[in-house]
Length: 231
Image 1: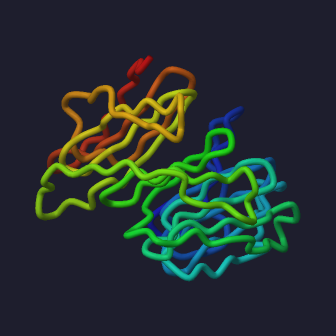
Image 2: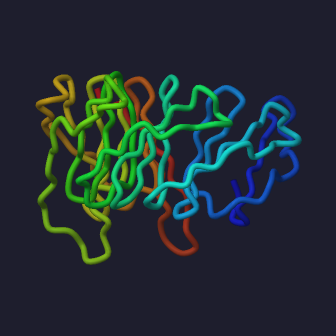
């Protein structure tokens, strides 16, 4: 995506950056499922783009979310949307052109990020890591909350990034850094360590036993990408 709110596709075979897709709003996050692209656009909700022809992507549906859509995670036939103070929205996307709301899990301060592992959704919710049982998406519920109570810098959004792989979750508390949480028993999560020299990460991605973090530092900002083996 670019700052003008347009989807850009890079052909990995030719390294060609294809022409911009249709105009959208400010894009907070991108998720892919087969030939469909899900764009989180804050207060504009989520737009679903058919990119089966990468040179001519088409918007096929729009989800109007009750809160600002900051992140969307996809698992099977469902989309899980972090919706700020409205909590977690769960949508049936078996037909991406006709998404259907199944459930909203509320009671959250500010759901900023979401990741899925097995039957659980992990939500970065300002002062807490929320673990939501989504075994039945129509009756999902918060299974447990793990509070992060250390004093925060004045400008901090608190728990704002989450990435999950296997039995570990990486939780970024803005201004304080990334903690590693043991989730081998999702109903009994526990902090088991921290990653030094992390404080203002812009994204976290887990793959296998590795965690990739990015952060914009300094002026002009520089992008830092680190691969860390967390277990």
